[in-house]
Length: 154
Image (cartoon, rainbow, N blue to C red):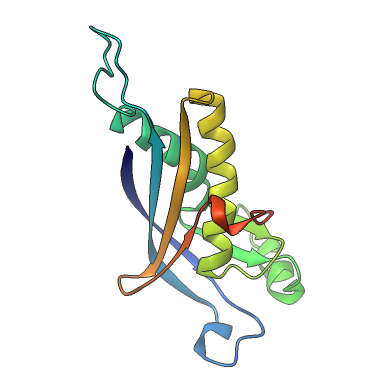
């Protein structure tokens, strides 16, 4: 059984070597969906009986490990040295640095890795991350799942 929780956040980014408009500094209203899978809890009288997990717990996991860190931040590629230097010159600026350009694909892979570790810490082997979907716009998104191999590093 699979369940999904969706949250939204705002962040800026740029794709420095892109041949189109995304090479410019800009922002998005991102959405992130976390899909987890596992067996239904069968324990009679349990708060989670007949659930994979409580949606409130899934929301808290997603909020703590991704949204709170990326919301209203600038997501920047470590190799984008000029922009990184500029952002670092702004006192108190929220900057999140990534090992690759912060494309929707890279963000989804990074979130998949982060949330996989957090999910394992919370649920053990009972529940697994099945998919992370990052919407860059309402019509454009990237999915990361276990079939995609090694996840990206932040």
